Amino acid sequence: MRQSIKILLVTLNVIAAAAMLLGKLTTMVSPAHWLVFAYFGLFFPFILAVNFAFMLFWLFCRKWKALFISLIASFLCINNICNTFPIHLIRPSVNEEASRLKVMTYNIDAFRQFSASKKSTMDSLLSFVNRKNPDVVCFQEFYVYNKSGKTTEKNVLKGLHKYPYHFIHYSVSEETFGEGLAIFSKYPIDYKGICQFSKGYYMTIYADITVNSKTIRIFNHHMESYKFTMDERKHYEDLVGDFNSHLFRDVILKFSSKMNEAYNVRARQADIVAKTIAESPFPVVVCGDFNDVPVSYTYTKIKKDLIDTYASVGTGYGNTYSHKLFPFRIDYIMVDPSFHPISSRVAHVKYSDHYPVIAEVALP
Image 1 (tube, rainbow, N blue to C red):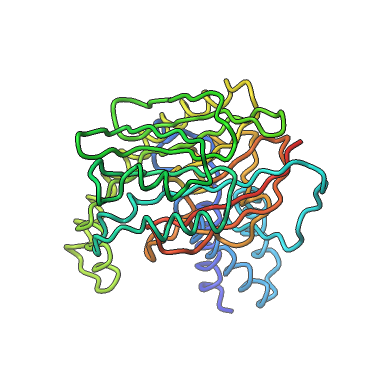
Image 2 (image 1 turned 135 degrees about the vertical axis):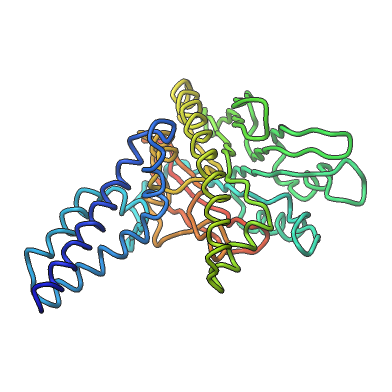
């Protein structure tokens, strides 16, 4: 290998390794203080892939010193790597006599009533939930009408008759419709609560249930999104298909503005959520659409000492947002450290723009 080419490749490798380490910093530094780190977390999978390619290249060329550039960076970011690409081929051993709890979290995208087809997925989606038969279901973007003949709360309750206990709170409530969060449970709900972030759409609700004499607090979050419009997403798709410098500039300006705002707001919401979880007198199950990736301040702040069920026992990248150009894992089920995750998976069904996460845990 020519010396000039080797120097160039080593330089690029150092930049890639530094980018991965900067991604690690986003888990420690609030975007409200240093916004730029958040983008290294968002693109962490791509940065990791570049570093992995460099390691394979140096290994093939037998350049052992150069190999250590990305190897050391990967070692320092091992937790981020495991949270992003978990691999578990052996099912964890669990006490067969232990009580179990099966939970589902699902951003249902208003039952797709505002998708291009304008056709509600309510019947198919509720049928899917009943087939999977979780003990607790947390819905985000729960949108129902008050008119008969449409997707109504009454029809949803009828479709989920196996879940006699529920807590529905509408952050937006009008004469003809309501939209918010919902928790459905097979177990009685002893107490309900709301954590409103501010005057707006996003919030947290929680409900206490008792399972075999153990009280558990179920949290359901929906956190600040980037609020990209359909036109903006279409522009992004057009740009990927056919690069245009003018369109690129417009997309970057619009996307960065909305993303910067979302990162700042979500960081403040994460601080509130983390405090609310810490104040729980009972072990917790934390569900919801965090609208942020595993290598992020939001994820790390909320998770703290909790167990991310998918990172703990799931396998693969596990994206929960279904858009082919935004394949991110942003929906989570986290549990108290005293719980023992048995299984966790992402179900690739097309009833929403998100995929549901289903997890089963053994209780202490």
